[in-house]
Length: 229
Image (cartoon, rainbow, N blue to C red; front, top):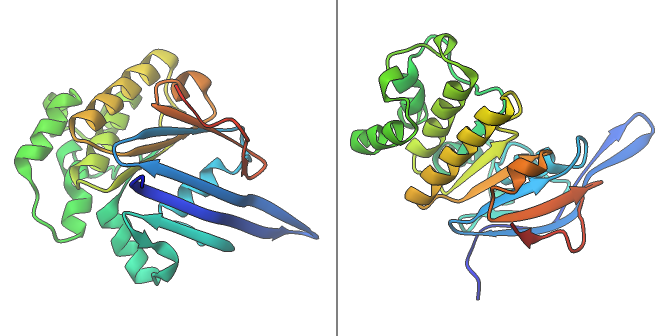
């Protein structure tokens, strides 16, 4: 039997918009194996961000279940979900979400400190070195380029040794060349530290860098779209 780190069963997210019911997700069955790099591709409004938010415990489904690292998220309350997110999920966002008053190193270790956990300094140094931001450790985010800021966000996502990394359009604000550099580094660091990544993007070139590609449209996974890149 296959071992999955992420699994969704009949996942639905419906909400009202005026008189209409919007089916953001409409019965999604989806699974990702440990150490896999999966890309979910789809146009704006296809449901890919909603799916990522469900997997990360940022949103509650109308129906269906999400399992991450063997835990059923629907059985958790708000406090348990917050702890789960902090310990089990590394997020990488399009807008970096770095704290402007903290330097690079402080941003990287912030989630670990918020959890009251012990910082594995050697591990953090190794990530920072691999992502080529070692010389920027004491720099503030506003002194960095977009590509450098996204590398800091990647380091922060990996530093807490999460079960999964969720990347939400991580190259959306970067030019093509920087996008490919950042994606190459993300893939390299994930392989080095045996990380599982689920990436969402509307960019086919970026999706091709993943091990596996899944296409989503109108809240459903397109039949026959799940393939290895």
